[in-house]
Length: 232
Image (cartoon, rainbow, N blue to C red; front, top):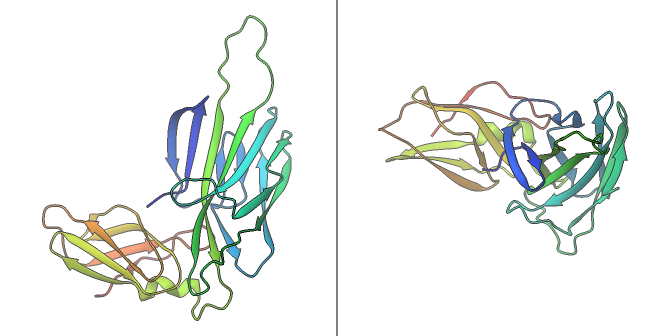
């Protein structure tokens, strides 16, 4: 599972990574995306996302792109403007357009990732050693067909769980990606897991963990849902 994340880089050096689980915006270095996930309607020509610079002094150069789950930049989507300057305490809006030539599935969601890098502008004062830090935020982007037979809010209720030896298997028959958080088996914590539509995820268990499977999920707005029990 790939989590929404913030990377802090000096040049090409990854300095830290922070997972986002329940914020309504994704922020790094004072620059915030207007959501922690993007829902792109498959039948829409484009969607938009605000980017805000909350810093009172710094000007940032913003670079944004879309990648596949294996972290390769894709030409399926165009982000405009791909590069722009954002002034202190100002908001800009990017547009995301699908231009791919290969039709995407119409019976389930497709997964991409939207990344935005914020590079502070300005030259260091003469005689001073300074470190310019670039921050990168990456969030999930779900391409969603418009005529799916069920609603995304109902997808978690359709999950089915099975303990198979030292493995927990979670089956997702819905057409939506479902992100499990606060996942437990017999009261013991398990890693957050994203289950693809019409697929099954296998989660290794340690030390004979078993019992009731409970979880929360992340909704379309990046908030946690109520706790549920996963039936067999």
